[in-house]
Image (cartoon, rainbow, N blue to C red):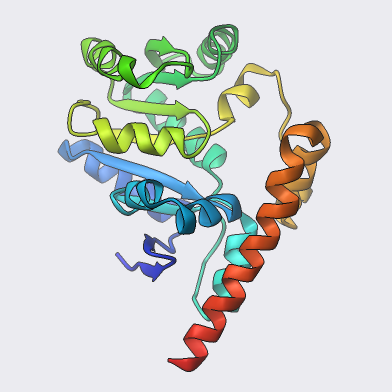
Amino acid sequence: MGEIGIFGIRIHPLSKVDFLSIIESNMENGYQIVQSGINAASIVEIVNNEQFRMAIRNSNLVNVDGMSVVWALRFLGYRIPERVPCPDLAESILTLANSRHYSVFLLGAKEPCLLSCRKNLEARYPNLRIVGLHNGYFKDEDELKIVNMINKEKPDILLLGMPSPKKELFINKTKNLIYVKYCLGVGGFFDILSGSKKRAPVWMQRIGMEWFYRFIQEPRRMWKRYLIGNTLFIWLVIKEKFKLNKA
């Protein structure tokens, strides 16, 4: 399995089909996989946050979640087959769980959102076993309690619907204590599943404008991330280009 070493982390330039093949094989063999997705905002955080950087480095699989990262890596000379958004990957994982009768635990978001998620998922995937739910608003001192709760239900798959870097730091601290076969950070995916938020139309996703759709939905929360964060990301990519040219 090829990988790209950049920004102090390892990125796996694979298609969604390739990721699913690796995930399914490892789940059948009982090996644990922790997967993280990266976008422009997380790259900026990775460069400035050592704990977050180590959490991403300790992930078994790292997919390119943001189209801006696809373009940046191609600009830097790397071959990236496609963007693999975490919501799309999560949908495929849920389809796999439905067909293989894998059990799932949902951790993140608020209680009403989680209840709507479960209702909608059970309607869409009749064979899916959702064995547990817990909101994402817990303190550091409650982490062991959350771990014990997850282990009690014995899920095969853990989906983390929390923002970065909280979800990555949580799983990096606890992955040796949580007995799941597969863990994926899905960010705001639970909001989409519950129906409380809409995802950008497919045509906007394809041209890399999904971020703008999110900005329109939540301008007060997202303006700093996209205006300042994207500017910093572009600067990091330019610096990396100069570094590669010198090498």
